[in-house]
Length: 166
Image (tube, rainbow, N blue to C red; front, side, top):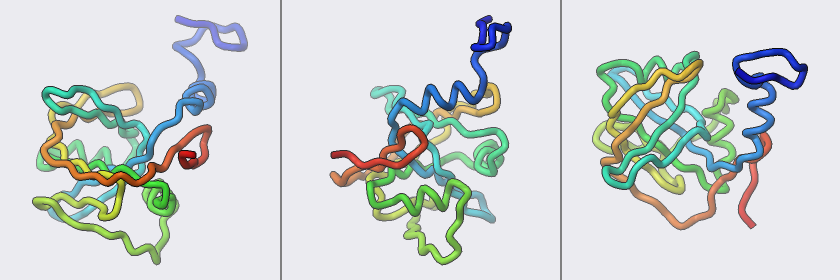
């Protein structure tokens, strides 16, 4: 147990303090994609991490309230995609973060039935390996079965804003 800034006992720091503090960690921006027989979904996420080289594993964190969590938790959904956004993809990040642009032409393509976004910095196809409940989020461990990438510059998220390298 820790003591918060007001001096009272708590189960850790407040959500606001958590967000403010971890906002100082610069991260890339991804769009997680998945589909079942009736729908194709995408969700902006910066909670993405490399876990292991052998085997090649990554981890994503999805809010339990997100539509993506409902889709990924289905047994029938065995794979998900990770699309790493480049510096010119702010519009895609905004769109999939809940600020939809009805006129946006998303360059979808499929790899073995899994929707991915064309023109992004990198795309990964991951087989769902493990699902781990973690507080108000669920962690999805994925085995990378396919990847492709470019050498363009990434979109970076820092202190609640987009940035570019350089």
